[in-house]
Amino acid sequence: MVKGTILVSNPTGLHTRPAKNVVAKAKQFESKIIIKYGEKEADAKSLLKIMKLGITQNNEIELQCDGSDEEKALSTMTEFILNLEG
Image (cartoon, rainbow, N blue to C red; front, top):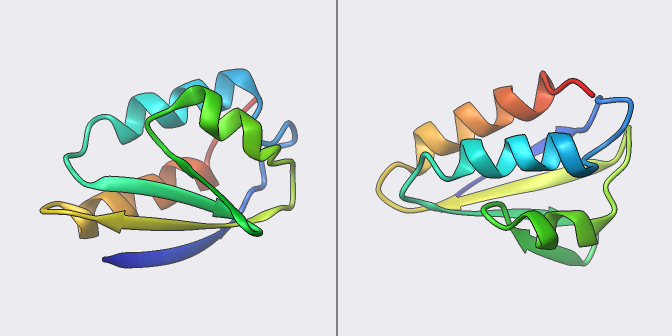
């Protein structure tokens, strides 16, 4: 398992459209990808679970990736979330 911390810079946080894009990107990997925000966590391949986290701009999240492509998943997902737009 690998982990990384990200500051969400998207002005709208992870509302519906950005969260949908995160899910689509996460589904490209075999690894299990978890987004942690505070004490809550969600499967990055589930739109509803991400939405329930209530992540807004400037929130710090942790990505946890576990599986055969975990390193690639972590680096790709980190870069993707850092560059999310509205």
